[in-house]
Image (cartoon, rainbow, N blue to C red; front, side, top):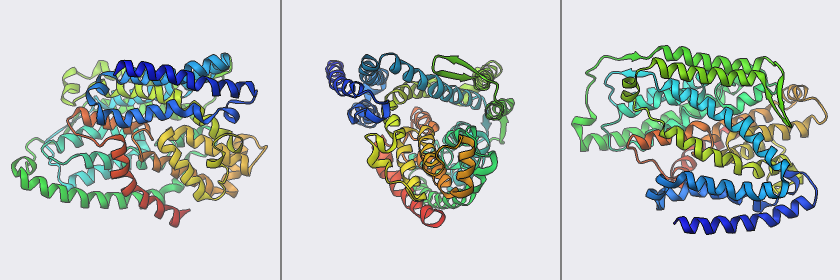
Length: 476
């Protein structure tokens, strides 16, 4: 298997180098002339995440770092060979300004929430599960989808540890808590936070309340019906285990970690409110307020590790493997997505003109932003279509003025971009940061989650797409 990978990597390097060299010789910008061939490594890492666990599970669990490295090299080496300093700067840009902040925030919330232990014996009944999903959906906009997901995923798994059918519970948890629940504030989901940083008023996102409520109520209702059917099967098979009663009083240990979560969220709000200048590294500008945010987030995680006992984390089923897996796989995803994002930003001048060229109506922006968010990570895709809308409706205006003009005259377009990015981040495991982490935690806890394609075609498309169609027809 390793030999096959080496030969495939060598072939990919040669295959990609020639079209990249052609685009460089034409002398245009990245997005305008990068060939479609350059997205092959990005497609490769997505297909690897999808197919290897299904067909080569033993190889994947041991070698996924090598697979990720191979696809990263398959893009980076010819890219750097052709564009040299420009390519290095482009890769550093996405690593320092996108990947590292993404990873630090994820690590901070994962570490701190892992120190909060919910004690008590919970019975994973449909009523309890639905109530917990509703609570998680409600708080996700206040503490972020990552924070809410990391806080509640382990209690949910413990409550349902005696049931045979559990994967559907985790799938709906991803739909609601890890995605749609983050619709209402810039703290809820990374795309909305990026919009806030660029001038969208903090409380503007409350305008998404009705679509959020509509989608959430339908999903919770569908979940209750589905979970009730599976619960009836589980109860018939193992009644003693499934119908266990609470024997330990509910209590929370490690509650000081809630203060640390507030510290992290406060640092995020601080970084979007104050502008303290920047540290310039060539063409890369590291904002001081962003550096302070990263320092405070890391400090909160370290304090949590110091003050939370090892036993509490062990009782919580805490381990670093899900964090490690997300860090490695998303490093490859962020690097290999460079050409896809560049083509999208080039609009009708790039090789993805057929995708973005016809966007004019709000529902166009919803579906385009949403579908691409499902595979390109919703935060950068949100920015791409926000910039596209600004260029279309408010050309020549400074960014913040253009955003206010968009809100005044074409508000539905901004709502469509926001809803598409947040809602449809749930369509795949890589659409939003917490999705893959929740999947990893569930699998580590013994729950056989659907494969990448299984999740899409068995769950997200049949369940979510009809709801999205209704959202478009009613609200957009």
